[in-house]
Length: 246
Image (cartoon, helix red, strand yellow):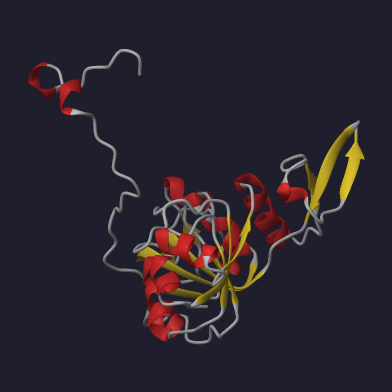
């Protein structure tokens, strides 16, 4: 089945108000930028977003947040987005913070049909409030439940028309997990190749998980936080020189 659709706008056309949307990406790497932009243009409201982080104020999921399209965010890191901070502190946004490994495993459990799992992460902290605990081998564990979504938006490096996906480097961190954990997965790919062109041994996510595919465009290599060495750290010829005590 050819899953390629004509545009990102067509791919997200049935995402409704109040939907739970799982979004791939790690920092500003591997974000489904074209699909996020299409969701922004659509103007859908009241979304629950599950993603590793909420991007920055202007990039990643930031535009959806600025447009007040989000009701709740489930994420592991939110420290680069000032609008997120403002909305959360003013009570406009519901937030569920989940340890990063737990978030990845809850998504994996959702995709694998696992009813829950026990972990020691979060024991004795606010993460444990209201959760079932169990003592195993003399140690206390928390019961964590799977995450499922109505839709998932993912970014792939390469894809074929059947929706088989190949991810690249850091973009592989969360995109495969969210893709498997949603009822409808929509993928965008930097390159779409003919069916049969992908080496089966190199496919990271089989097309059975993907409902729709769109060819992405105009990707930028965004830097979440730029860090440079002080000028006095440069040695002869501009080579960096280590600073003592650092």
